[in-house]
Image 1: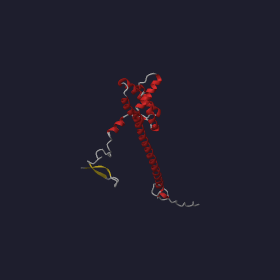
Image 2: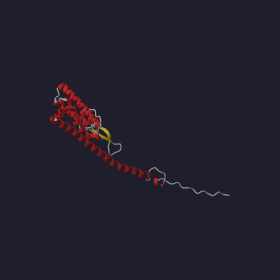
Image 3: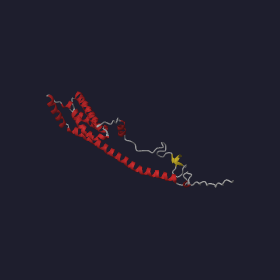
Image 4: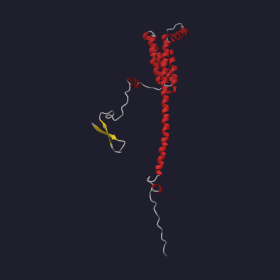
Length: 218
């Protein structure tokens, strides 16, 4: 079964015959590769653009809240706190704006140190609490390094993609500039060529001749 779908390249008005069961025949658009479900789920998430300071405050506030909740419901479990630290690090690196990507791997360890205060379990005033925090950071350094690595990898991938996009825009602009200049020059030459619609000699039209005027007779 065949049907007419459009014009061909050979003739200005000739129809193009395409098989009805061919790909793209029903929708009229070229088919692309299917998008993975994970990518679709990530696209549905909100994508704010935080500054470097905003991303650090976001991560610190979230980790401090999670630390208090961990101490309240799970008696300060370091494993749960470390597992929750990984997605927070990923979100921080995803939501920071492109100009402040370098701040993501810096702010994430600070947020981990802020959130570990409720589950450190220190006693004896400020000194005892500080020692407990330092001890917790040393004992659970694996989670700290893991979250920092996640944030660094995501920030690096985003930086590489941003640089590639900028280079593509520069190449596109550089390629479009000569083409635009050539088309403008061709249009100017076509407007001066014979047969372009003018009435002068260059347009192919005839110049009207003047008839001699006879002198007045006395």
